[in-house]
Image 1: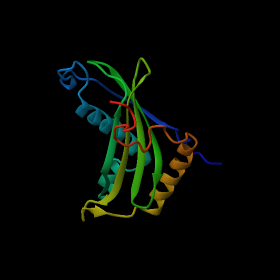
Image 2: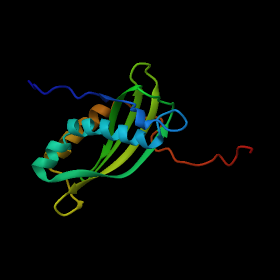
Image 3: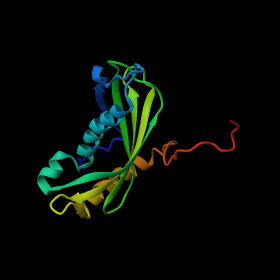
Length: 167
């Protein structure tokens, strides 16, 4: 019988509170700090999936972000607490495709979403590198658990104006 803990689907973690210096002249959290907050939350997700700081120290390998897409859904203000959920959408031998949601931790609303693509990198060569079979199998197990969540509605969104809409 396996003693391995079940894989959380989605992975959830607390986030920081909106700091005073994150507030812009519009009186809400500045767009740049949404990325900072997601970065802090995703560090916990990457630790959980096995490619965080300890992995880097042990293997001299890490992940580099190739692309990210933020959607701003609802404002956060000074001192507001955050929490995050993360979902592994897909992976191959070198890349991870993930999705995260930022929530107001007390009121429960979605404040923002983020989709990203990362590359597994050998830091000695500063080039993309295949991950180990063990790591690949871990990602496969996490993806299988997260597949039950379904694809987020925001996944794959593009930026543009609806040209059919009247001005």
